[in-house]
Amino acid sequence: MRMPEVKLGVALLFVVFGWSSWIDVNGVWVELPLMVHRLPENWNLPSYLVLIIQAALIGPLVYAGVCHLIKKYNTEAKTTIQNLQTGVIFCIVSVGALAVLFISFFWDVTSVIGGEERSTVLLTLSFALAMVDTLSSVTFLPFLAHFKPVYMAAFCMGEGMSGLLPTIIAFIQGSGEYTCVQVNATGNGTENTDLQPLYADLLFTVRDFFLMLFVMLIMSLLAFALLQYSQFAKSERVKNESDTEPSILYTKPKTLDESSNSDLDSKAEIVKEVDDTVKESLSTAKYRLILTLMTLISGVAYGALPSIQIYSLLPYGQLYYSWGMKLATLCNPLACALGFFIMSESFLTLGVLTSMAGASALYILVIACFSPEPPIEGDAAAVVMVIVWIFFSGTVAYLRMLLSKIGMRRGHSGLFWLGMCTQIGSFIGALSAFLCTSVFQLLGSASPC
Image (spheres, rainbow, N blue to C red):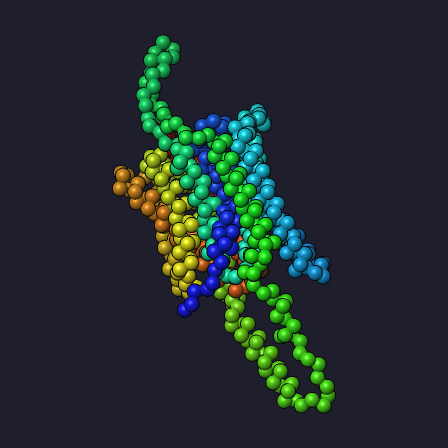
C-alpha cells in the first residue's frame, strides 16, 4: 500500500499550530511545585485549578449554541461558520499568549477575598487560559477537517507537544526536587530539631518559564495564519463537499422525446454514487460508540487521573513524582508520531487499547486511594508506578488519535462532536476527582519529609 504524500512544511506547521491547544494550561501545571510554596492556597491550589479549568466548559457550549443558531437562521451557514471558526482560533491563540505574558509577571500577586488571601491573578488568568484551550477542542479539529487526513498525525503530535515542551523546559529549570535537612528552631525556651525540605537552585525563574511559553504561542499564531492563507498550505486542502454536489444531485435537463433507458442509466449512476458514499461513511451505531469511548477516555485521562496523579506518585518521593509526570508527558507525542507509520482503524484494536488503558488507570486509582501509604512500597514499586503512568499516557494518546481519525469519516460535524465529548468527559472526571480530594478529602496527602 502506497504511503500518502505529505508536505513536510505543512506537517511542521500543523505541529507548531497543534502545540498551542493546551501548552499554556500544561505550563501552569508543570510549574505548580514551584508556585504552591509562595501562594496562600498551598497544596490545595491544584484542586482550585481543576475546578476553574472545568468551569471554562461554558466556552465550547456558547460556541456550539452560536453555531446552532447560525445553521438555523443563516442562509449561508457553512461560510459563516467557517469565518467564525477562523476568527475564534485567532482569538484563542492570541488571548492565550497575552494571558501567559501577564502570568509571567503577576502570578504571585494576591488579594484578600472574604477575609482570606487568594491568588486572584493566577486563578483568574488560569480561567482565561482554560476558556481558550477548551474552545480549541471544538475548533481546531473541525479546521483540520479541511485538510487531507494524513495531517491528523502531525496535529496530534503537536497537541502532544503541548505537554512535552513545558516539561522539557521544567527539566532544564529544575522543578521542585529537594533534600530533607535538619533545622534547629528555638521557641518557648526549648530547642527543637525538625526536618525541612531544602529545594535545589533553579536555572531560571518562573517568570522566564512563562515568557518562553509566550514565544511558543506567538509561533503557533503565525503557523495558523500560514495554514489559513498561504498558497503553500491551501494546496493540501481537500475538495469541499459542495464542489461535488452538482454532479450528483443535478443532471442535464431531458426533453420528453428522450428515451427512458437514458433516464434509467442516469438514476443507476446516482444510486451507485450514493451507495459508495454510504459505504465510506461511519454508521450511526459505530459513531455513537466512538463518541462514548472518547467521553470515557477523556474523563479518565484528562479529568480524573491528572487530579490524583500526586497521590499515586508523591508517596514514593518527590523524585518519582517528578519523573513520572515528565516521562508520561513525553510519551504523548511519541505515541502520536507512531500514527505516521501504524494506524489501524479496526474496532478490535480499539477494544484492546481501551482495555489496556483501563487496566492501567485502575492500578493508578487503587494506589492513589491508599495515599499517603501505598500498599506496595519500595523503589521497585515506585518504578512500576512510573512505568504504568508512561504506558497509560502513551496508550491514551494513540487511542485518542485513532478515534479522531475514524471520526473524520463524519466530516466537520463528526470532529466537532468528538471535541465536545472530550470536554464533557473531562468535566465529569475532574468534578468527580475534585469532590473526592477537596470536598470529601478521601485521599490523604504526603508530607515532604
